Length: 370
Image (cartoon, rainbow, N blue to C red; front, side, top):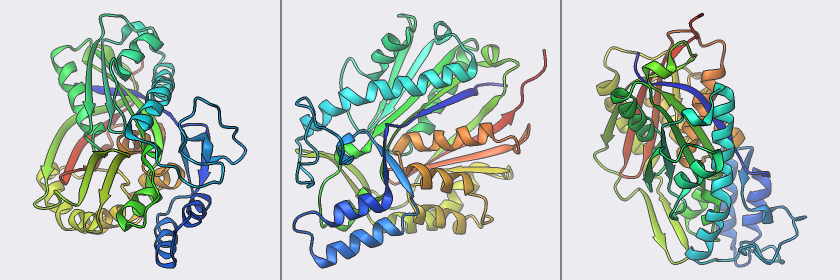
């Protein structure tokens, strides 16, 4: 046994938005023409999302804006266009408490005292500040000041798997280590009104959320239920450099998602997965739901059973695409699923800019009676 995820905690903002309400909000923006309205309706309706969460309480019409709020929605219910600096101020305000909420759930579920955490790995691509979320977790959770900290910034939707890989490497050299991995993404801070198809697609799927995984080394994980981190792989597809892009502009971060993304994944997922898994066919799949079409292409490209991606589709339907945090939401469901028994092999897949395929092979383990 090597590294093991012994618990996963999740947290979402209090403001819940129904997909049809957000669709109608975007479709009713000033200057939206008939063609753009059609694109909005088609993108939102085909996303297979029922609801999402956002840190922007301004989406709730009953919310009373305070003087300290960054204005994202005007009193006339039209989208404002805050600067990147203003959006990042909102990130500094909202990201730390959401990160801490997910981490506290992970610590509680594992019945682990915060003083036992030896390392913190933070992940985000939706905001920056220093001292950053890693520092705030040490302070807000009461971790030891000697905790070693690392940050994976701007890696995109695939970043949770490299973060788990880093945690596994830490525990390989320090079997008594306990690594707290926290992924926090506030995608809604970068919404904008647009007639551009790619921006409309992004607005139709992205959401806010945080997830935290406690990864324990062999000594620290002994006797605990969890998910063993067996091995990892990274594959760059032969194309896609300009099809999934995350850049910083003067009015927020801009996501480019072209219609080629699902098609590239569909064409190349088989070779990427076969080269990683070899003869080790998994019992369960944890696939990042970049969108409904991405899951459809993975399902068809790998010739999976219709129910194979149920956990991914459920998370997408209930939470939307929370970028890097999403795959940990899926793994939490699988960890708690009693129908998945000891020894079940789980294949994790996530997709990021590049276009990059990040893979992980995990094994579910039940607690050994003392």
